[in-house]
Length: 151
Image 1 (cartoon, one colour):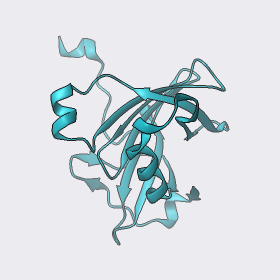
Image 2 (tube, one colour):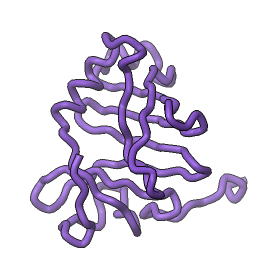
Image 3 (tube, one colour):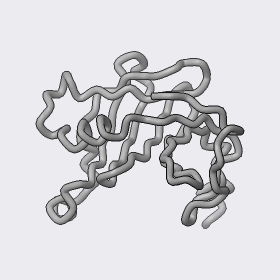
């Protein structure tokens, strides 16, 4: 994993329906290793189903033990075996939780720790280079609408 300064990158402000977060940390991840690990996770013993995820706030990275989240219907899994939906709890901080979705090529993650929610999302620059952006929920590129305002 390599860290980049956001101002050094040429990231588009929009990608699909997503907007670039207001503040973020950018990483390059060895996608070949990551994809191999995620695709083969079903054959890995629980003790070795561990992933290191970056977090903000000076914590560096947290290790998470992964398991299937149980959110993908069985019929959907059979039709799309490349999709994975995983959850995890940190071995370093039992209050820290991870939700990770894999689409066959990239991951999206939500990390809850120290009362914060952080997201790790893929973002491609203008040259087609894939970065992962880590940002706090409050810095997401779209306004947060509390659930109570919808009713």
